[in-house]
Image (cartoon, rainbow, N blue to C red):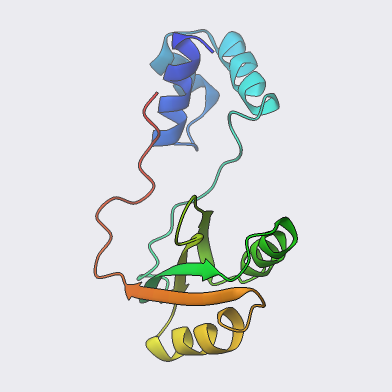
Length: 150
């Protein structure tokens, strides 16, 4: 990956819907080489996809919580099972496995506090292997999906 690839990635992070012609102009390439570079970045997995950014509140999802999950056993089978269980819950929009304690940091998004309570009580806290869950409510998001500095 060279400086031109980094410029392409920076531009696509700003606006993934721009045309290849617009992109090529911004990175000072002709269209064909620009398109070849974009396709190569996609093939190698550096570009993993394109998506729309959605404002959760405007979509009716008012309630965000961060959960700090500690597991009872850290053997590979238990961890894999918990990872699969968390990944299968649509309301979980981010989940990171961490070194140390806690074992997982989870971001959940629901319409209301009551919806979150149901999610917590009936879907997350019942996952086998979870020992403790601490949660906190998100007051306001300050930085959301910042482009990766290249």
